[in-house]
Image (cartoon, rainbow, N blue to C red; front, side):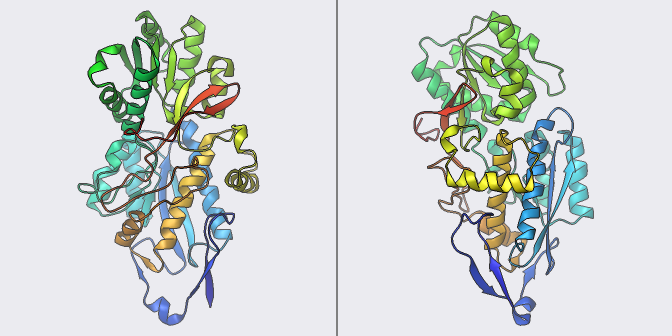
Amino acid sequence: MFTRRRGFIGGASAAAVLTVSSPAVRAQRKADEGVTDKEIKLGHFCPYSGPGSAYGVIGKGLEAFWKSVNEAGGINGRTVRFVTRDDGANPAKSVEVTRELVEQEKVFCTFNTLGTPSNTAIHKYLNQKKIPQLYVATGASKWGNPKEFPWTMGFQPDYHTEGKIYAHHILANVKEPRIAVLMQNDDYGKDYWGGFKEGLGKNVDKVVKHVSYEQTDPTVDSQVIQLKASDANVFFNITTPKFAAQAIRAMANIGWKPAHYLNNISVSVAAVMKPAGLENGQGIITAQYLKDPTDKQWADDAEMKLWRAWISKWMPDANQADLNYVYAFAVANLMKETLTKCGDELTRANLMRQAASFQKLRLPGLLPGITVNTSATDFYPLQAVQLSRFKGDSWDLFGDVMSAESS
């Protein structure tokens, strides 16, 4: 019989390629645990509850994506079983659910598990067991270290690079900057902070106040008051969505209006900017690599039309202003392409080889000029961003696509 190898959901890739599947071919199939002739089992967790629950929509988007893949025929004739768990952004819980996924569910790999502390907690365990930890949902720079952790690969531009880009932009555009920094006190926050300091270089003394908060804190209001008292005229906001919205509101309440740089992971209009008050976010600068669904310039864009058609069918009640759904669609398409490239050699080693062999791959939802590029020594799939400024009710891109080196 014949099975079809499909491209991006919705038909965004090249034409389908017919592949022969006969009893003789099936007998030669190579597969590891988590794969049968009929199914591929993927493991996932994210915070559906707790302080990081704004990211729960990513898990829901991924779940809907794999349902749509299965309806379209699966991956080379196999359906995908997506097993997702709630870790509440608690690293201890992350370890618990990962052990369940590996030792009880016996998944083929983990995919897009979310959070820097959570993934740090399972990093060594998965590598010791030689189980792929693919397209991790965090931009920590540690996910691109194939020499020491050959079974882990990131996805989005890394926090360190993004932090350097903000520093370079501040030095080039703000006269006599006095910089205040708010940082979540964990590996995620420290990665951004490290890149930012590296970008400032000899000008690191331009940072006049640096305060942190814990993920379990109720608010960051007191930290914002401290930062204003430093008389800073620039604010680098390293916060997750809940705290980003709080910080923006708190700044408006006390009348503090510095040049404001907000990390990319908290730029969703639906999850951050609207709760913070659109009027309070005017002029904030961030770095983006995805097409924001609220940006009117993408109204007639073919990729965004593809995404809107998909989400309207598979998630009709979803808030289409939430950028996290575009993120889920993009990274899931990358995972689909990776599995498809494996053909009938669905071993964990081959999965990592295929993940490390993309060149200039376009994914629906990426900004123009940004593609996926990997190799055996490069586990950073995306390493370019474009600066954007919040204006009205959406983000407005400006400047060129750049990396830390080009900024």
